[in-house]
Image (cartoon, rainbow, N blue to C red; front, side, top):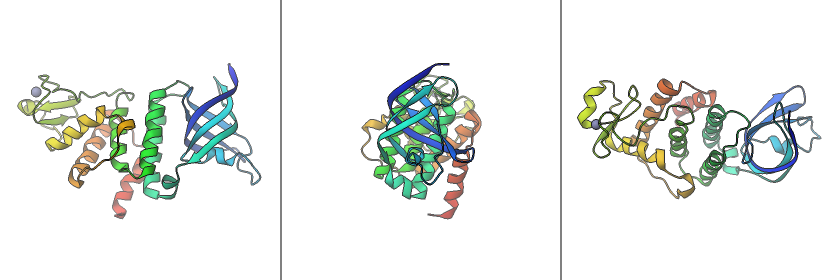
Length: 253
Ligand SMILES: [Zn+2]
């Protein structure tokens, strides 16, 4: 067992859960150590001065002890801020919760993932700033396929290697197929060419460089269907937070 004491790191709270009577476990995506589970003792007591450390949708600089096996401990939070819009809006809240859940599933604990720490933090920032949460979610869903071990070919036709033309998506072949090769999969998703173009773009787009997003309603619906199909058939996970989003669509908010 290795204990690294008095470490300072940047972090993004992914999720908290009640633990024992007065405690909580908080899963924080850190820049230096990857995802770490911290045990916050007595944090549910009214007098606790540490309760702000477990708040969802917060990020900042933290100090603590990192334990290579078992729980780690937080001493302090420096400049901890909450994404105020996300915390107060049930829809934004739902999308960010789902993204956090996906990242928790995609990566094991305690392995540094600096690039993903930055991407996920940026996704929360953009959603908090008012960019379309559905599209930001789609982008991360597509980019997370690689760590999930799916890594579909969105660069070129999986049959003939064509990079230009009109494409559709094939779940079975795990990638795009050009019009010439559509007969290779009779269950291809029948997507509009523009929808496939967005899927290809999402695989490459850098969230740190996004300033605005505008995708029309029909394409958004197809993106949701296509990505749901890929997750259902190729990744095979359906977190509760995603179920909540799917139900939310029926409220018409
Ligand atoms: Zn082809």
